[in-house]
Structures are given as C-alpha cells and as structure tokens.
Length: 429
Image 1 (cartoon, helix red, strand yellow):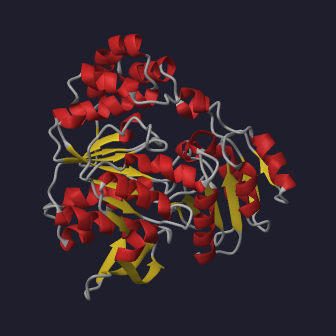
Image 2: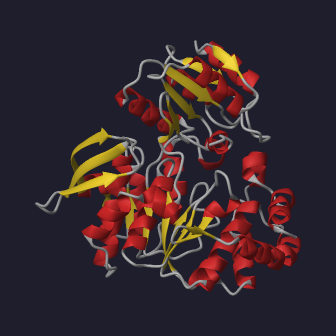
C-alpha cells in the first residue's frame, strides 16, 4: 500500500468515532494494553505529560510541547483529531510522522487488528507510542481523546497530569452532571504524580481533591498559583503580564494565539511548567517566552481564533460545545467589526439547542455540515436554528457557505466559521 491507500485502509478497516460516534469507543483499556504488550510496551520507554479536559487541552498541549522544544528537549506530541493530514496527530519537534513510517507501522499492526479488533483511536495511540519510543524522545505531550479514565492514552505514567477544565460535552459517554464528567477526566490522576487543574468550579473541585488525596498526588489549581495582571490583544496577538502568586516578579509574554480564552490555558501551562521545573527539568523563562510567541510555527496548531484572510477578516475556530462557544462569543465581543457573518456546522451528538441559544440573533447565518456521517444535516441545522430565532441560508458544504459569506460581507465585516472541528478541517485555505 502507498500512503493514500494506507490511510483509506485505516479509515475503512477500523471503528472511527468521528464517523460512527459512541459505537466506535472501546470502553476499557484491554485493547491498547494488548497492542502495547505485542509491541514491547513502548509507552514505558519515554517520559510524558498527560492532558485531559473538556476545552483547551489542544492549545495547552501545543503550548507545552513548544516550550519543551525551545528548552532543547526532543518532544513528542500526540493530539486528536487532525484537520487536514492524519499525521498531524503524531509529531516530534513539530514534524509530522513520515508517511513511510505510517505505512510500515500500519502493515505491522494488521495481524494485531485481526486478532484484537481495535478502534482507529487505539491504533493511532499505539502508532504514536511506537514512534516516540523508536525515536527516543526526551518527553511526549499526550492529549486524551475523550474522557480520561478509559481513554487509550491512560496507560502512561506521566511527569505531571493536567486537566484543563470540565464542561458539558460527550454527556452520553461521560455522565450527565459535571461531577461525573470530572470523575472521568480525573481518572488520569496517578499515584504520586502531581496534577494541575486549569479551572475548577464548586461542582468539580471536591472531585479533584478526592482523587488527589486517594492517589497521594500533589494538587495545584492554576487559578490560585498564576495571576494574570493585565492583558490586551493587538495585531492578532495576545500580550499578557502574569505573575506566580508565590513571587513578586511579573513576566510579560506575547502569544501568537490571540484568543482571549487562551488566558486560562496560559495559567495552566505555566503551572505545569513550574511543576516540571521543581522536578528538575531545565526550562527557563527565555524558553517559555520564545515558545509562546511562535506556537503555531513550532507545533502546527491551527483553528484557534485563526485569521486566514483580511478585508473582510475570516476567522476559523474549532469551538463546538457550550463552554467553547461561550468563550468564542466573548472573543467576538472584544473584536472590532461592522457586521458578523457566522458559518456553523455541528455533529448530531452535541447539545445543539444550547449552542444555538447562545448565538447572537443579529448575525447573518450560513448553516452547513461536514462530510462525515456524524454531521447534523445542514437543512436540519437551519430548521433547529430557526426555532432559536436565527435566520440564514443553508449550504451542503462549508466552502460553498464561505463563498456566500464572502460575496455578502463588507471589507470591515467579520466572517467566523465554527461549530465542529470537522467543518474547520474542510475549509479550503
């Protein structure tokens, strides 16, 4: 098989959550443990950081990877899903796994696929762990796919565990209240391993405290450890002054990730770095400053308040659940524009009514869908939106919606595309 044939094989042979939804999830760690045992347990051969959370874990993962790279460490990064190329999921020092290695690893895994019947996600995790071990990375930043306790990545023993926040998403799999969702995410807390919580609320804080006590793990709430003194956005960059609560020294940072919602992630990242420093990792402020100024260049992160065109501004954002949309709309409020054109597509298993109820009725809407089975049909989304008082036209594909928005928008308008990672992935850049 060549690379294109290999990717087609993986998509067609293995259960895939983005296509099938919950039926593709393997609700235990049996398969990944079997895959690891058959390949020599590569997950035990490198150090790691483990990151879970409802929102922000992608940005947090990429920022931490960028900092470790700048500090001189050979750094693996595993994230999901990808936008354009499968290989975005598996990187070392920002470079994607080579196509030839994907081909070779897939062929090596075929007998295991027949024997174990793993999911697409389980195979990609095993592939990442194998490559990181082969390449002898100093450390790998590992993002969970969904949840934490039963996520395939939850076989690693990290240097630090990070939980960015808890919100309403994947309730059909994780639980119908925030405490239950928090318990699933807190499943990544390991005995004796420090844990950083990016954001907690009264419903979730006791859950984290109980898990930390049970595991005798040092617990850090980033909001109580790192103080944002001031911030502003300029020229599509985020300028932040931050100070550790335990120090009198404030630091000035400039990020190439301009969304205001990155402020919470910055606190989380800085506290995770502080834990690593205390454990002996050689990371200096110069590394942090240089890395955060060029996260996108160092790690290939896209889709976070990402400006792809000016006059009019066209922004892509992967926000897709209640908390993500709330944060995105706050960013919209902080932006300068004449009129908002909002292109949105969603998948069927999200809380669609809640998301639609948050959107501003004064915007012009362009309803669309990703080309995957889980996508909510664009006409259905238009009908649901009408019930919420949102009027607009419907388009079968996101680029047709974008063309329509560009045709109607004035130069000082804002065109925002959001609602699904898979919609963002299909934008022709």
